[in-house]
Length: 122
Length: 122
Image 1 (cartoon, rainbow over the protein chains, first blue to last red):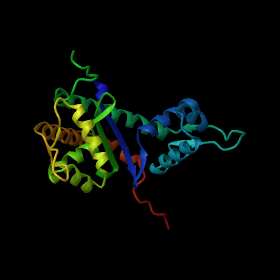
Image 2 (cartoon, rainbow over the protein chains, first blue to last red):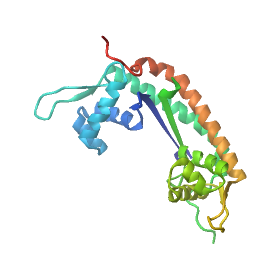
Image 3 (cartoon, rainbow over the protein chains, first blue to last red):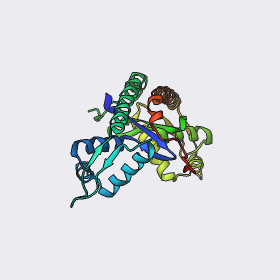
Image 4 (cartoon, one colour):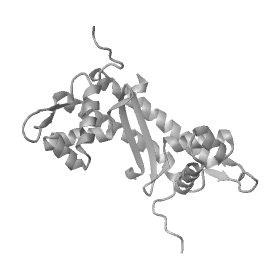
């Protein structure tokens, strides 16, 4: 039943989203792929969007979450900094605790909902 | 600091959103305004969109959350059913419990974030 409840957690900084579900996924993709362009490809979003998401994240925290190396034909690689890894881990732990709490409350709501994929009674 | 964290809780039914922040606000507006058109006006959204949101909500639960009275020149009024009131109250309570938990965890993340409205050091 866990697919019946969906929670989006966002950390705001001056009305900008410093971290949310998409940016957390992006941090993971950058750590895995090693560059912004490869992360963009893996997530099927534009390089321009990745760049803007990285800028928001880096701007929301005391020091950057993503470090980019300029130069080279393809613009160099990118890594998730130590702060980036810490923030990501804390965001994921917050997410899973909130999800667990929500699911425990959901037991009151679920019986009121229509069962999924109702088929017409025959 | 509570404006630094934003949480969206959604209840899904067959990939449709049966209840989320916008629909909860709509239930409140319908209860307050007494008709779909007045609720649409109060929330500054189209009547068409209100109608589609009401359909999703009514379709996600065992019995409708909103009851509409047809007829009359303006299409009649709308009320939030007893189930609608129960579901709304439980959603709000879930929201506030989740918010409280998230805030208690946020104390670990907040020191890592840049203070809001950073002004350049002079």
